[in-house]
Length: 198
Image (cartoon, rainbow, N blue to C red; front, side, top):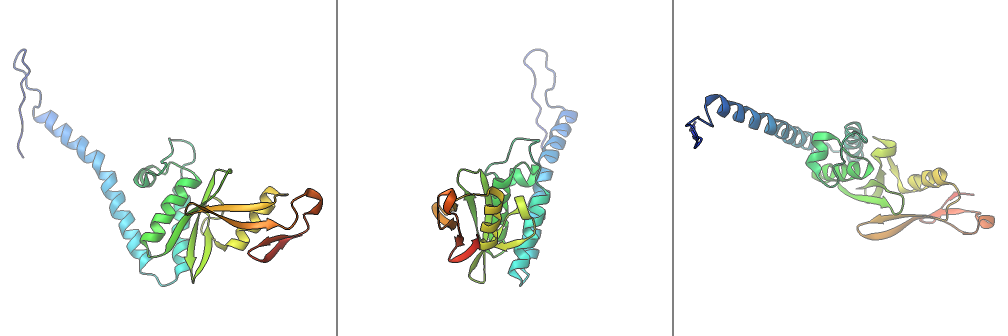
C-alpha cells in the first residue's frame, strides 16, 4: 500500500499520517461493505429462484420478501433507485412494484409495473402460462391472484365505481367496468367479459 504524505504549508504537520490513512480506509470499507453484501445476496437470491420450475411459486416467493423489507415512511423514499430500496427498504407500493418487477424479470419471469391512475397505487403483473396475473405486495404479499380477482377486490374497496382502469406500459387497460354508469343503474360489473358483481 502506498502511503501519501501531504504537508500543511504552515508548519510541516502531516495531513495524512498512518492513523488518518487507516481511518480513511476503514471508512471506505464500512461504506462499501453493505453495498457489496447486498449485491451478492440479491444475485444469489435471483439465481436460486431462477432455477425453480414453478413460475407461480417464483412470483409468490419474490413478492413476500419485497413486502417484508419495506420500511414505510421513516426515511425518504427510494423512488426508482433499485439499490437504495434494497439497502434501506425506503418506499411504498411504487418501490415494491419496481423492485419486485426487476427481481421477477431477472429470475426469468415476464413482469411489469401496473398502476391505478389517480390513486397513487402500483403493483406487479406477471405473465404465467400466457395469462397476466397480479402480484400486489402492498395488499396481498405472497399471493398471486388473477386480474379478475384484483378487479373484484378493487370494486369492493371503493364501492360504487364505474371503471377500474390500469396503466400498463404507458397505455390504459380497462380491468373492469359497470354496465350502467349512473348510481341508479349499476346492475352488473364486468371484467374482460366476466360478470363481477350486481
